[in-house]
Image (cartoon, rainbow, N blue to C red; front, side):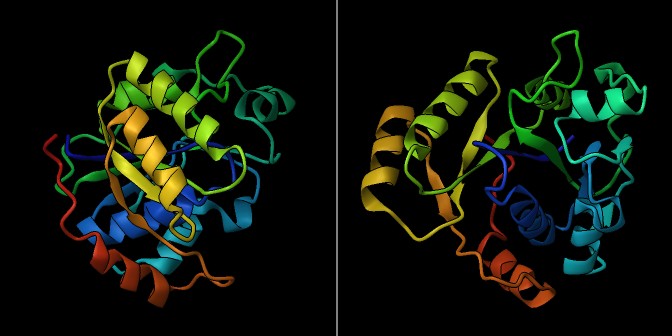
Length: 208
């Protein structure tokens, strides 16, 4: 299965926006197995709204009402999230873009399964979404270390912020992971923005 998993160094760093841009860039099938909160305008709805018809968007496996960590949101509805219940699409022609929920160590359940286990199970290389804020170097390096500990390849880092030469240079020095680019997020995201940015990432390489 070709494609990318989109992971973030935390919540609200722009994973869904980057997922839409990458999906549009490579003409992908988008899949977010777990949605917690905002069910009437979920991340899947946003990707459908922002992307052209060359992008498919699969239904969520778990659609939870509360905007909380998946294990908490599922407990409120007496639902148990298990990784084995999430089936990755088979026999799809398009590459897959997989989006998790929150940071990589967000718990899925009380058994100890996390979003990182979801990424590992997909066997897709990760595009890491970072942002230049006070503390982001620490968050990025910790995230990279956890991913590498599981021997999951990282295709590169996209920063959803103005370039910061010092921050990005030190992260690359410590991790040896290349920057794929910077995406400056406007106040309003629309299809024109997504499709314009997608053209910049049309040469993403699946082969690592």
